Image 1 (cartoon, rainbow, N blue to C red):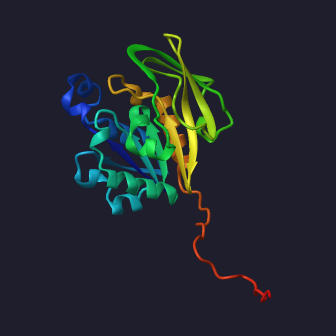
Image 2: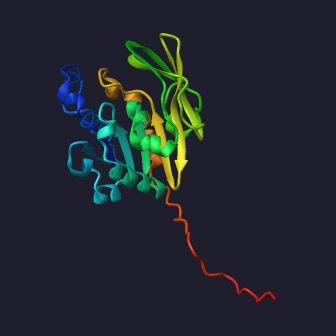
Length: 241
C-alpha cells in the first residue's frame, strides 16, 4: 500500500465562489477521492492546519506527497519546507501540480526561479505523450485534450528534466513541458502541469490516471539506504612508510 498525502492551500475554495462551485470540498478532497485505489491510501493536509498539516509524524508516514499551491506560496513556513526537502532527500516521492511550480519546495529542489509564460483564457490544451514507454504514461492515449485550461508557455525556468513525458500545445500557439521528472537524493519528483482552480481538470479520468501512475512511479523503490560519513575499512590497511 502506497501512503499518499495530498497537500492543498485550500484558500481559493474559501474565498472565490467560482472555485467553490467546482471544488466545494476543496481540491485536496477531490483529488483524494479520485486517486484512492486498492494500492493507494490517501490522506490530506492544508495550509491553515498546525504545521500546515505536515508534521514530522505525518511526513514519516507519507510515501508520496502531492502539492497544489497558488496564492499562498509565501505563507508556507520555511521550516516546513526544509522538513519536506529532507524527506524527499531520504526517499519520499513528490508530485507538484500546476501552479505549485512557484512553491517554495519546488524552487528549493530545482535550484532555479521556475518562472514561465501564462495566460488565463479558457483555451484548449492538447497534451502529447512524448515518452509512451514511461510508467507514468501507462494506459494513456496518444494525447489528452482539455477543453479549457490556463496556458503555461516556454521558457520554463527549470533544470533539464531527467525525463520528459508530456508536451502541451495550447490554442493560442504556445507549447510547454507539462510532465517532467527529477531525482533529488533518494527521492523522485514529478511535475505535472494541468489543474487551474477555475476549471474542473481534476475530475478528468485521464488526468487522474496520470497522477495515479505518478504515485506508483514515485513510491518507495525498496532500494537499500546509502551509507555515508566516516567509515571503517573493510580490509586491513597496511602501514605505508
